[in-house]
Length: 118
Image (cartoon, rainbow, N blue to C red; front, side):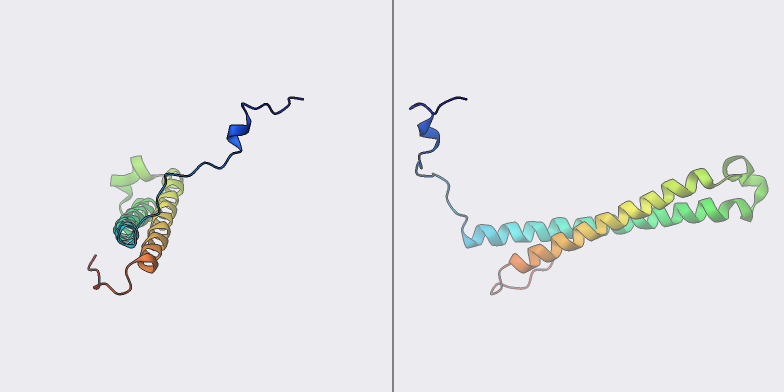
């Protein structure tokens, strides 16, 4: 077992911190940035989920529409259904994260400021 020497005591001393607290304006600017990022994630999640839905529809319905054209690619659509459902889930996750990020920024934004058109 090691003993605490005088050289180790400086770790436990409370030195004055040079960190400053952010101002209200900086907090409000950060909140607006979170809202913008959240909006982009919501839109991106929507686009990804729609792409997954289109892929799912192609995988499930494509083989039965025209068997001659799609027989080579979609004869057994099982290999496309799993990834399409994964893409839908990923898009939904992006949408949820973006929604919570946007709402978090909205709660921290300036209550007395003008309405933000994002």
